[in-house]
Image (cartoon, rainbow over all chains, first blue to last red; front, side, top):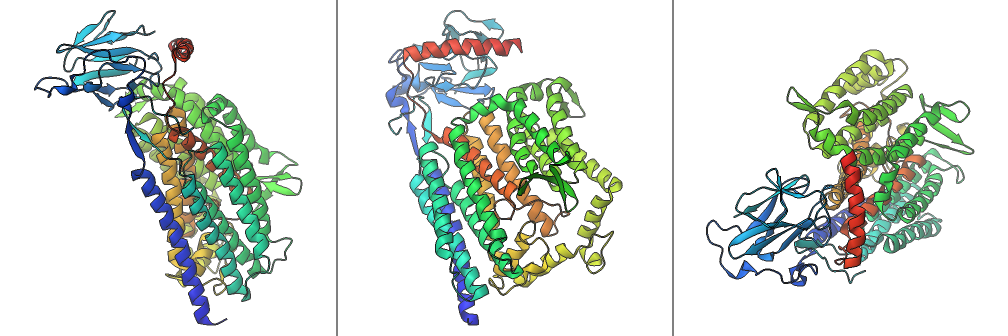
Length: 159
Length: 476
């Protein structure tokens, strides 16, 4: 077999090898950018339909919280806009903030609004919801930066 | 399945199933594997091998079976992992076949044939793993069983009768006609054990304990069981003179611990202990010292062996890769048989000689992609155990590749390990197919769309379960 044929076979083979690698890369790329991002808020959690007014219509003013953020715990960094209020927090899959926290209950607490005031309400959790070191037993007003502790997780309202 | 809508009101990243993409990539992978077989035939024997139809059909059947298995058992699993693995395995088969031809092996005792049998076993075990592990979280129940199993597996080769010593390492057992390296199985078991233990105890390890020169030292009772298991495994490996595996297990331990606790101090402590261990090993064991000396000055010991160990293998491999250059000599035009064990530990130089740097880079990129898919699975996994499991499995592939490729290219001292999926070696191939099955299982679980909001009855049922769990957590 001639030298040239062997050379062509080799180059063709290397080309196939790289086509495979590039195809794998393009699948990874499409996997990353081609996936849908759904915002399922259209189908509000069935557990708490339409309770509380949605403040989304109003433009946020200065000093008015716009979202709730998890600051400590295994879900630290998660934020949810308050426009989706009432926000259910817990381990259950229907919660707006799903906590990966052994000390949280399925539907642990709820953050809701009344007028301009935000409240946190314990939903009968096993281990309780705390503001500071006080376990709350009724809807309690919270403001910007108030630390709400659920199990090992701490949440607060943010601008 | 596709009717699921995510129930959370957070934006949710919905992965598509991507089985079609996987099929396309598998066809390409088959083209690479069977094409390599044809190219070997053309280059070495100047004709397309006569058995290519049978060989190709067998390979196609295996991969189609694997693909259908994934479609049925893990429909949302990562689409790239299986084709990558299939490509590496098919490519390795062709290279092993090429070395068989060079060695003049007859049809019956050819390594490629045995490797194909091992690959079949590997694919069967891949499907069995996907079938018997419908949810990776059930593996967490076997945390300690897996740890015990790993230690037993490591001890097996030391036992008389079934234990067998090959090339100075006592890491084999005799199973009738075949010999097996139980250490490869121990690797998978140990990953499960580390992940299971750390998923439960990571908080205690990261938070409880004293601070000492900027490093948070965990309490003995939290780290103790894990440390004990690890020391036992490492001690056994050192007794068996299996340097590569000791390095692999050590690295796995440090990486998983670091990922679980998020403490950079572990990397530091791990590095210091590693340096100390290496220093001790060099001064205590002559076989380690020889490895380091031949690594530092390979050409000094090329013609004359040092303590009976010559660096000929390493140097011939380096010669081969240099001779191969950018695009290699072409299949059949190189002399890869000059390197002893070219089909197992030294398959990378053999490929480098005949297909050059271009092919080596493609292969290394494939390993990189396997590791990347593993780590990505860890990122999207929804539970701690799944995260740690996939980190551990991805790390085992990464470390194994690093140790063997670094060894043959002279970056680090040479330690015996097989190149995952590429090298001849049944135990390693089978274990790596199981690793891929586990990775696909975790990725299927984590990419699957979330189920719809449970009904009230479901919630009530779930609530009772949670109360139980909470009590368990409190009594800890």
